[in-house]
Length: 142
Image (cartoon, rainbow, N blue to C red; front, side, top):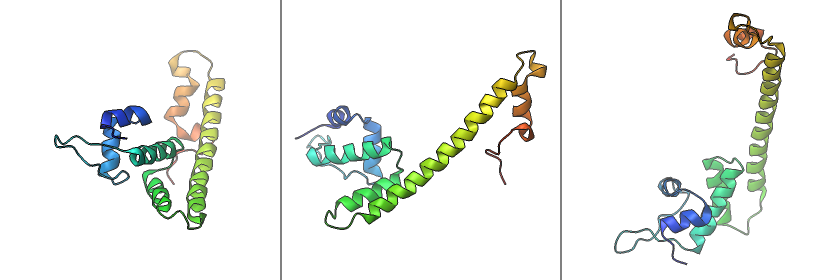
């Protein structure tokens, strides 16, 4: 397999600037280049970029992906480090879901309390202007 960056981009559905960024930060190794300085990619690059894309789709940050990729270099080791990375990410996702649930509730209350009159009486505007009128703690700096 011998792909240009554009062909790699199309095959894995990752934009060219993103591929260059992943190379720049070391998630993808620098590929060999032709005499004309064109990057060339092989099957291992396709697999690695697919891994990165899937991990990003699942919300893993760059450092977690870097850790997971480093684990793939040692396939005989126990997978507990991968478990810890996923548990850490799952905890973050569950916290975000809880925050979004509160946010949804607050937005629904704002809509339910709105009388659809003039803006000077709009409950939405009142709540946005005075955080103390919110029913839930969200985004307040302690």
